[in-house]
Length: 387
Image (tube, rainbow, N blue to C red; front, side, top):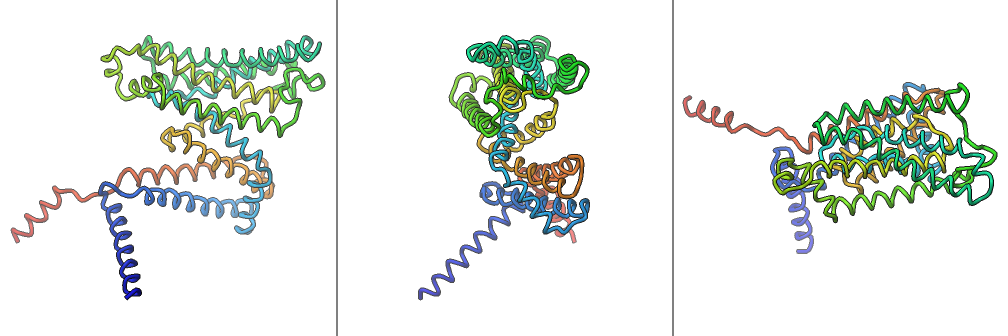
């Protein structure tokens, strides 16, 4: 009797699974979440296999060795893995309030660059003052932090003001601001280094403006903790505060926000300020604690963060998981390119494209499915009756 009950339970379980699959394929409602998760995981696994095969062809090595290189690079330095994920997450968190408001801010990289320009200018210009004593060095660091945040907020405010007053296209405006900031950064680097495109590590001997004194591990930890704190702050702001509620209402319907007497111009400007604050803090940390210089090396990361935010529906917790995954891929593929003797990051960008395409395709199949048309069914039924 017990055996029959076990067999019966297995049959019922298999029937329920087949029912769920049938509902999924036919596009019915209330499909379990685990099926959607399986679809995404299947897309990621497929893209990983394709990436390994392509990498093995390019570097002319065994696919199993490629997998070995990949995991070796991904886990060789766990703190670097977490740091890279934190940078992606920070750029993603910076755009969450804007995108929730349907304000398509593509200028997080420009905000970051203009903050970096201010940081290196203060670090270089106040080098003699900061080397006087430890207190003066602390003054320089605090001034760098405040100026970085203010510069980023100011840069984010320019397109926000035009959007609020003249309803300009914020997507193109913020993209153009990125290019202007990149040009200002190049000009600043050349000016501070007497003609070179890079300044190198500023104040290398005096360590003025250096937050951690050159200790990369402590610098990585500071960045990781700071980004996690900002992520939690943005989550609380968007879900538990009046400001977050107003931002979401304005994003859902501008007319509704106006109808309930919300100050839409103030909300747009405030949201841009929040985005500028996050990128300003990130720029200060990367310049003062990690690099002691500024470059446009994080531009790709800022645009990848937009995709991360979009795929996670701007949920900071899901964004954290996706950021870790992309950092895992970046570090792993860096080891693969090094083992293959490739001198550029083109292969890494190619793999990113494959993975993003697979995940976006899986999202398409989750949200949209082919359903039978009632018009076609009625037409076939009438035709059958006529015959």
